[in-house]
Image 1 (spheres, rainbow, N blue to C red):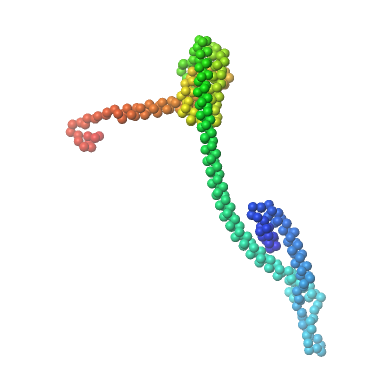
Image 2 (image 1 turned 60 degrees about the horizontal axis):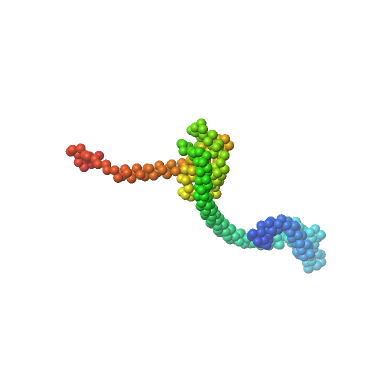
Length: 308
């Protein structure tokens, strides 16, 4: 019972948001309980309850006088120690008060639980809004980077022109054969490696491919919005890579170079093919609707049979 009083004391004296202080107060309650018991015991000794007097008549006297024994000063008629009799009313009072206080604490705790639930709901809404805001900011930043790298690709075209002029001056033609998304060099002719080695001796060739690799890396890594990049420079990128197919294929086999160019080309070339197929399908549908399809019913058939 005294521990319950201690729990009430620790809970009320501590704010709801300071649990450590409440637990610390509860941990000190055994010492407080011992002090309370000692105080009640000393109080009962200093103010002992009046003992029951045994009235016994004596010879020759018509009056009654108290008759007491030494054993009756320490025990009552039922054999209960006198100090327990003195402490019991205080203990019962403390138990009654602790029950009321616990009820008040329960009501207060229920209100706090409702308040905490409302706070948790607000926090969840704030987290959702924060995630939405972060996603919006990231998407905006990715689109801005896409525009920046698309602008960089436009400047790359000027750099590539220098390489084309140097290659033409050295009588080195750009690749114009069949390509595939895996960049295999099986379809290349026997002179392909010699031509590639001659192209790699030109500084403009290395600068051109390194710049193209950097642009591809921005879209592959997700720093720039790949969808926006495809809509803006997708077809130009694929066409440019196709002219350097021999260099990328052979260097990819030799040193695994230009990984980002190969990865982005595989994605964008497949998407370009799908877009072309979709355009062709739409064109065929339009032609099919515009093409007349007349039917002649057999003689003697009318109504539903003619429709069939």
